[in-house]
Image (cartoon, rainbow, N blue to C red; front, side, top):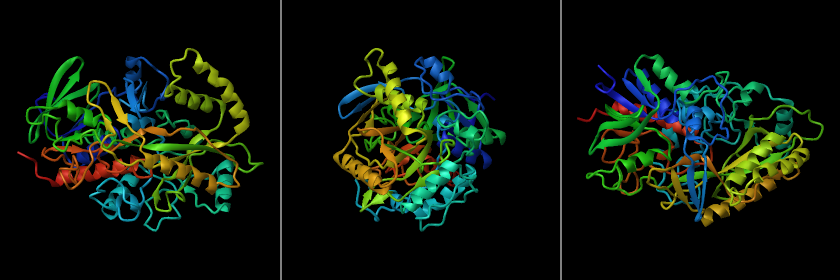
Length: 516
């Protein structure tokens, strides 16, 4: 029997943290799983980063999303390559492997000021066991947040701190803050820190491939087809067939259940492309919310110097703190080390990223001129460490992924977001008073690696796309296991929440009778 003749228990579209995790759980439960991945299989252990490659074929061969994204922000349109993956493991093979649990107030909506969302249909206590399972699956290590009143995640012991990390921990504690060892799925060695933003040549990072797809394939119950671009879903009250373009040919696959895990930017695009007479505005789109309520985080980056006299050691990924997670009732976010030392190369890269998204991006030769200010900044910063504050974004229906053949988004920076950003920057400066620090960047910086919210789940079909189990309203066998399900962006990196929810979705699939 061929792959197209087989009726699979589940087809998983996308192999990132969500798809890989859900597919593994289903395969380990004995279900026959077919992974469909647009990008190439590639190799897990290879040196390959988010490099400046501008040829679509070359990007795809490296596991990068091949086409640029068009972003219209407050009416100004730019075009650039977003930090997205297209290969086995998806974007997670390039991620920094920070998997932090959200706060109770992120999921239980009565604790802080109201925000424009009906909230999470599953609260913190219902999600807690899934966070624990995901932490074990991804082999997280670190130390508990000293400010949390909830039981900590199951964490492995972290490695010893470097002299720079130890000095920064002590100076932050002396300032009255509460740093802890960040929760990561990567070993904190000098070699492993070189994996941040790139594939890991040493197999030391847990991601959608190493913690998801590969263990699923090892069960013998799963099959992977790479370079398979899913173009359309066919069906009405259930998905009948999944259509994909493979080696220039259109092929159709059948399954009892379909798990959509193409990411918060691409999953809604597939549903919008799957319009039919039964679904004229796009599959599962009776609410009109498919692709809407797009959220990111806002990055607030700053340099922090260790106390004078500290020996110059490696870049730090170890430090996190939640003292400013919420402030006087405002939803802000956590702060974490980025694993970046303020050296010349990193500063050049950061300046060029800013330039690529600015109105000056088309000026010939301007990219080369970033070297001089980078050299001056590197001399000024010495061995400062780069930190980022992740400011929570909130959902607005007009912020959305646009329909069409190319990846495009339309987004407005709402006044309340800009007000909270000013609050966050002031709070960071006040909290670090007495420390040698420098806020980096002037204007708001959207974190394009953290899109979420475009297929939000909820209890009311009129105001959500998915039900509480992340099954599409009106489509009995369509499930979603990526960041698009989130009704709010929270104040942490979304990876652990994606993995936890993917495990929850896989469990719901197994508990739900197969539709006829």
